[in-house]
Each structure stands twice: as structure tokens, then as C-alpha cells.
Image 1: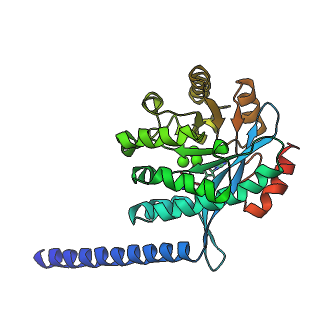
Image 2: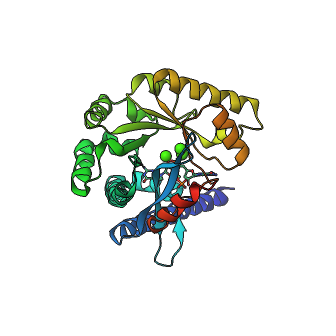
Image 3: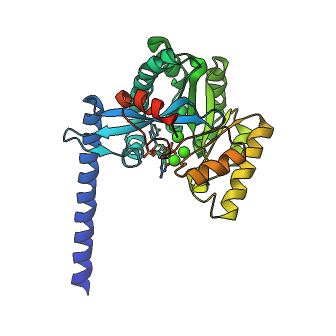
Length: 278
Ligand code: C2E
Ligand code: CA
Ligand code: CA
Ligand code: CA
């Protein structure tokens, strides 16, 4: 038994070592990818349910490897946060997205909104506000058309977060609470943080036609948005039935595969044209 125990310890060490090596390899790979321009935003249209028109896009990071494979942010954003790469990565996504969206903004008769996801880690870094303002100044994208999407986390309790948000809001930048209704973004963030938009999580939208509780939650979130003077955006709309329900509840805006998956910048103009036909 003793011998076995020692073997186990030895195997465990090897396992830890192997995992540490894998982690290092993935970290090195991600750093290289950012340096080589393999990380880029894709865009999903956001639709006004009253008019049926595209009012803007959400930028969603993608990693296109040299072999052409597209890697989802769920697998690399957490790693970027862990290895201290989220700040340059987030800056790169923001600057690229502002440059791309300026073209759509200029072609649009109405203001064209760009929504960018921000990690709580970025907020906690001292110079987040000046990074954002510099990106806007360098690209010419209007501050009043930029939305920043945040999820609640322990970091959002830092007093500096409120100060940073206040400074950016002075320039007309708007803030959205992402994944609203999930454990990560809840009612208390509404009271604590100065926000303009609620993004209703897709896990509730997917149950809107089948689950009374999901439907009740969406109804409550839309009512809450209205009484707080906020805009409600439903995420993850995939079917006409879901769209009908949300329209019936007077939800302002929505996004989802029903209109389009996130697409590369060069496909956005085509997608915008097609959305009007749904
Ligand atoms: P999120 O911000 O909640 O983004 C919504 C996710 O839902 C996206 O996944 C989007 O592709 C997906 N989605 C959109 N419509 C539908 C639909 O109709 N059905 C279904 N099933 N899914 C839909 P994605 O692009 O894989 O992004 C995952 C998460 O990664 C995002 O969740 C966000 O939290 C994070 N993320 C993405 N880009 C960035 C970034 O640039 N910075 C940071 N910090 N986080 C990012
Ligand atoms: Ca988001
Ligand atoms: Ca979300
Ligand atoms: Ca999410």
C-alpha cells in the first residue's frame, strides 16, 4: 500500500507538471496570437424591435488561428485575464471595433451603436478611462455611440470603478449590465452602478415560450428597465415565437441567431441589409 501511495504521489506530480506545461503553452500561444493579429472582433447586429432596423452591433472577440480555425472567446478570455493579457487584448478589440464601426456609423442615417465587452479586470486597472478616450480620439468614433458591457463581479465593488464609469459617462459613453438576471449580474448592481442598458441573458430568452418562470423574469426585467429609465436588450433570440413574445412585452432591442450570428467585419454590410427582411 505504501508503494502504491508513493506511485500516486509521483503520478500526481507528473500530472501537475504536465498541466503546468500545457498552461504555459496555451499562454504563449495566446500572447503570440495577439501579437500576430490573430485576435479580431466579429459583430452581431442589434435590432430595434419597433422598427425592425439594425441600430448597432456587439463586438465579440474571435481567435483565428494560422490554420484557419476559429476559437471562441469562452476558451481564451478567461486565460487572457489569468495571464495579464486582457488589458492589451481588450484595447486591441476596442480600437479595431471603433475603426470598423466608424464606417457603418458614417453610412447610417441614424446614430450607429457599437457595444464592446469589458472585463472587470480591465476596469480595475487605473488607466481604463484614458485608454477608452484615446481609442475614441484616435479612431474618430463618437463617444455617444459607444456602449460598454460589464458583468457584475467582486471587482465591480471597488470605489474606483464608479469613478471610472462616471468619468466615461461625462463623455456620453453608455454602460450595459450584461447577462442580467444571472447570478453574476443582479439587482444590486442596478442600485450601485450608473448604467443605461440591461441585457437580458439568453438563458431566459430561450425559455420565454416554454417556461412560465423565464417569461415572468423577462417581463420583470423589462418592467424594471422601464421604471429605471433604462433600455432593455434581449440576447439570444433564435425563433419567431421568441421574437413575438418579446415584441408583445415591448422589449426595446434584441439580438440573436434569428437575425444573424456574429460575423466578420466585411460581412456586416450584407447582414444589415438582410435583417430588414426578417
Ligand atoms: P456575451 O457578452 O454574453 O455574448 C453573447 C454570446 O452569445 C456570444 O458568444 C454570442 O455569439 C452568443 N449568441 C448570440 N446570439 C445567440 C443566439 O441566438 N443563440 C445562442 N445560443 N448564442 C448566441 P461568444 O461570442 O462565444 O462570446 C462568449 C462570451 O465571451 C461573451 O458573452 C463575453 O462574455 C465574452 N467576450 C466575447 N468577446 C469579448 C471581449 O472582447 N472582451 C471580453 N472581456 N469578453 C468578451
Ligand atoms: Ca456581451
Ligand atoms: Ca450576455
Ligand atoms: Ca455571457
